[in-house]
Length: 381
Image (cartoon, rainbow, N blue to C red; front, top):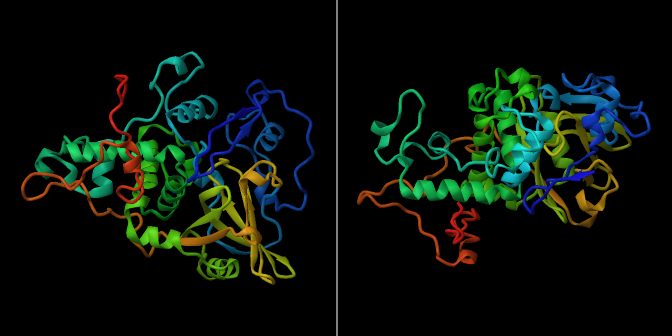
């Protein structure tokens, strides 16, 4: 089994049998027949078959019951085809197994940084913070590429955001998928050919840059930070989703917090299981193209959600009876996908509004929690 990294902000757990790469599949039980046929469809193009696909990513723990509210969003085709990653090494490994915009082999992984993550470029920084990140403002922007020479402060912040996302990109995945589905984010910003086929995204630089910039700017948007710090009751979440879901409209990102850390996912449908139980259908970016479910008991106002192949895995389980909590991020009627306030744009005197301590640990809470690694002494960036 291959185990991928995880961090404290986003759970980055995914286990994948290497037998999938050779076509050999271990014996396992058939998918739960109680699941709606809609969620037992064909695997993505290129997979050896439904058997291999279903036992690689599983359908156990998917939503069950009567469908009563639906946004129309689905992990396939509206989610991303690659799982959440942490640092550059895990991104490179994900590209090896799940494919991407360029061919990757085990040999090429030895080329340090060849397929890892580069710092946010000036185009991504402009989309996040405006043209003030450019040394010469609008006049210095290349009309063809949208790139510019960034101020030194902007370059530092670009690296800080990239480094600070080593713990995971779950919010970036969720916000980008929702924005693409709603048409708030143009398809070219994630390198997709259309919102309806995002699951065939080549996961090249546009997708990586957009996902990373959202993962980073969440720490610089006061509205988002305030929402993450509060919570909603599980029953109120179910009621809000039933009220606000409609076809072609995905209004929310759902955050869960507790023992495993924090995680952001996309809720896209509600199923009534009877007796006060509801399943919220979830696009969990730790597992591409497969449905997951959060179960809510409105009788005792509790919930349980697992981001693992084995729902009994306590390491990846959020349970309100043990203190976990949740909240909804309104990505439609808020500013969370818009430009954030720029902490590094040029001041009247030509300086910038950013400063870091020479002591690495002192930067841990700087700029809304964005981590900045001080200059390394080994000659590597």
